[in-house]
Image 1 (cartoon, rainbow, N blue to C red):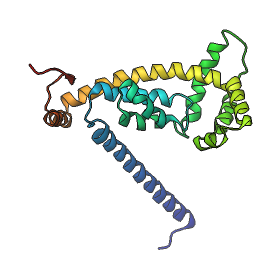
Image 2: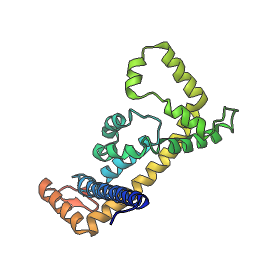
Image 3: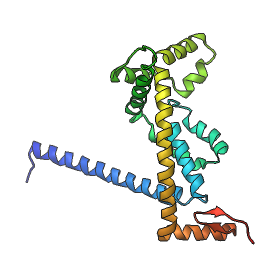
Image 4: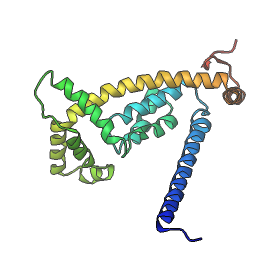
Length: 222
């Protein structure tokens, strides 16, 4: 029995939808496995893991696109944070989330600066336009010795960057603080009450042959 054109179209749409759903499920499974078997099972203390997560969140909330992963690698040793956790966390800000995330930062910074002086005010579409013209890491390196590039940077900061940076730093600190405490509590809970977490702690104890006091603070042997 032949199918009508409409039936064929509906069937092809259903197949495409089912294929998309399969890909989404696979991606969710991969993210879950990465989070559980990679991040939660890193041989490090909950404090350092949570610091890495907080550092990644803070940098993700700053307008440092193109430099974010490099900043994690540079700042992680200074704060004694785990860089392996911070590196994937910076991808919270990505081409999909960048505009709404940074517009919120800009809005907060704008409201704060308006208390002290009149500043140019941009709407959502104008913020989106400026962010899409933001130079990439490769363009910055190739134009850094040109005077015109620095004129653009100064103009960007004056019209848009100051509000963005003030809002980004304030919100980034808030998000990073919440991220630290929530991830710290979760890691301690996971390693205390789940079979996989307890097994991981036993492996860490056996591997390092050191006594760890809950939650995993090093203590000297008597």
